[in-house]
Structures are given as structure tokens and as C-alpha cells.
Length: 257
Image (cartoon, rainbow, N blue to C red; front, side):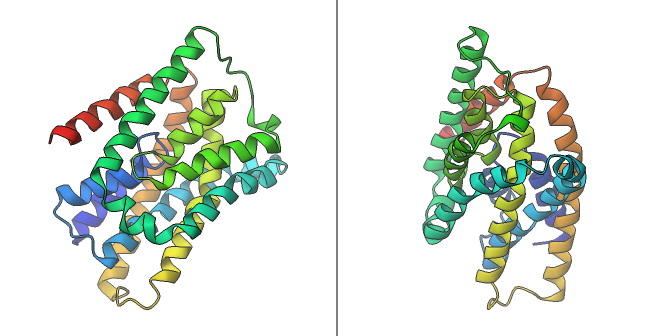
């Protein structure tokens, strides 16, 4: 991996982590396009730079969380199911899910269709998006956490599945997105930390690799900072349909590529 590769992957991570299009899948696809082999360092890099995106969320939403401390235990409750699934199925996720193109294509397509269905139900007033995350209860937090646990499959999109789950519960799109950002903090930091622990005995921490990790981290932070602010404003006036179409088109292209 070169410095240019690190920058490209950092941009891809920052742009896709908080959009409902699966950052993991896009990192995998970008690495394949760049002909980067899935070495131990490559896998670690793709996880580690997610922490850069998370730092952007912390910068943006620290004051919101401090002003609304009651949301913290709800976030923890939502995090637990994903933590359990990630811990129990770590090897399956890394060695099978990440290498299955068909599974990724199915995930892209299925959630794209789910977006369209949920938005249609909103359009015909079968779903009313009126809830705020300040009124989130523990029962809903558990449901959201169970939904997020499905995002261990590349292509599902952690942000996407949380958005769908919360819209089903009646939360406004921008409120659902905001909660998905906050929930990403413990989820991704835990995943990054666990991967670092698993990689402690690997010879990947040379000075050159540390430069690559730092570059990817900083680029991911900068691009995610822009995307997070933009996405909230976008969802205040728009639906998820454009992301649904993107997912379905991408799934079709990958299937016939």
C-alpha cells in the first residue's frame, strides 16, 4: 500500500461510513479496484481508519451528548447486541463474510429495496415520522441494537439498517441518522480496539505502516466531518430513495461484472 492508496481509502471511509451504503463494502471494493491484496495490515488499516470517522462525530456531537446525558445508557443498550455478535462470530465475519461477493451483493440489493418499501409506507401515511431520539425508550434501543447487529455482513450498512429500524419505529430521518452517528462511536471504537488487540502479535507496525495508518485516519476524519453535517441537512428535506437506487444499481453492476 502506498500513501496515495491510504488517502483514497481514507476518503472512501469518511464519505461512506455514515451514509447508508456500507463503508465496509466500499472499502473492500476500492481495495480490489486498486489491486491491493487483503493482507493482515490491509484488513487492520480498513478497520483502524474508521476511528478517524468516529472522531468527527465526537467533535460534532460532544455538546449534544453532554446536554442530553439520558441518551448515553440507551446508546449502550443498542451497542450490546452488536458487540455480542461481533465477538462470537469474529472469525466467521473476517474469513467468510468479508470474502463473499454474493453475500455483499444480496445485502446491497435487499436493503435498497427495504429503503423503497419504508419510504413508500411513509408516503401513504402508514408510517408517521414524528419521534425524536430524546424520547427513545429502552425497548426501542434494544430493537435498534438487534437491527444494527446485521451490519456485520458487508453491504448491509450499519447506518442504513439503523435508519430503517428507526423509521419503522416512527423516528424522523434526521433524528435516526443522528442516533446512528452516536451509536457508531462505541460500535466502531470497540471493533477497532478488538482488531488492534487481535493484531498485537503481527509484524504490521513498522514506521511506514504507522504513517499509512495516521494518513488514513486523518483523511477519514476530515471527509467524515463534512459528510455528517451534510447528511443531517439532506435528510431534513429528502428521502432515502436516492440511496436505495444507488444500492440496487451497484448490486446489479457487481452481479454482472
